[in-house]
Length: 338
Image (cartoon, rainbow, N blue to C red):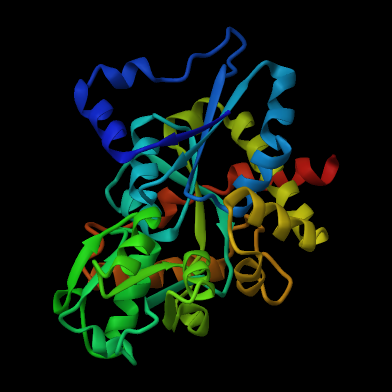
């Protein structure tokens, strides 16, 4: 089952009453297994999440235990997804590094249990109308730019501005979800948007826009995407989290073994341009292995430092508390054994 949660409805539900959180906690069977697992992803969906939705991998793993799995797509960015995770509205989520770092810095009871991906190409772009006069990022000073606040794209845009001596204070920022930004650009409501490569490709291929800056040209800006777990759920159901990650490992390995099929599935499921997807994974690899390496941790620390400097984050991350690879270590043994 796939659900889509809009920010307004979700936040209204969260604000309705503190007791509402008790009502959405996961019921358990007498044997200590949950009856329901809700797995989230920011829209249109992270690669392994999309593959699992396509082939029912999580359903197959847990149906033998009569555990229902719901896949939840968050259309308003990672902050919505991590809020749902921290409050117990979902148990596991795939998000970009920015929302994962922010919720970790807030002290919420969440854990980074694996990587969604660690691709060196970010897949974001700053795009303008095809007939726009802008030649460089510096030309956007004082202009209207649409992007979804609190996302990796927000961070990428901030880095691009910093590279030309600007900040977001030097222009008019508008908070826009991916399904609204493209039409806004075409109508002329904004001068530029910061979007995924897929959104950019559709507009460029239609002759409506051109790329001002491609983040794929700046691999130094990339940082890992995160699989996060609600801390209470992970502590109560460690074997379930291990099995979830075992499925994730299998999906990662399958994608590397079937690159063409992976690209076709992802393109079809997300209604993305296959050309744009192939460009994102131009070297034929998907970088979906969930292991949180030392290089990944250093990259996350660098992203955290940038976010703090750019005032995109409050507080600081306790990495020893936040990252918990015990489930992943067991998951690899389980995946290798099966």
